Length: 234
Image (cartoon, rainbow, N blue to C red; front, side):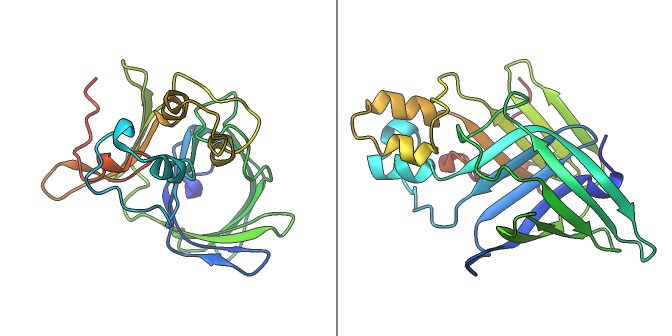
């Protein structure tokens, strides 16, 4: 079980790498229930997919751009939990995804645990890599601490809920080799296009409950799903 002050959906405000570079534009979400987690990261440099409605309609350059995403499901463990007198909290978190859930990338991008600090309001979190490789700031999506829900649907998809935020994950059936990041694997021009499409045929979508009652996908590893209504009836 994770501490209640980690529960909910956290949206990253920015990340600063050791070389000083900052990314404050990519869409990055970490949804944490009591026992399960989903992480979705859509690169800000992804080009437009206007007029594209499926993988077969993508150019090879667009397929390569899709491969830059990162996402996973699994569970989180924490240690060295400290509740500070000022109402803030710290802990060391480890995310268990490979062998425990779905992974967009075939290899681990950041293998380090995270040194987390949640402020006294419970709404701003700082994450640091022990090595100093990066520091991130996350903000809690309002209202996302409850209800929390995670289940595997009848069609095999994972469904996560944190208040108004829903994440749906459909894993690929054709797994790439655990040899390199997906972009690097796809850069091999000797690959058949059908193989590339099969590796990208996986969905990680982040949807929000709208005032009209619909749950609408705002961010997805399959960009043509953005703006569609989420269907979790299967």
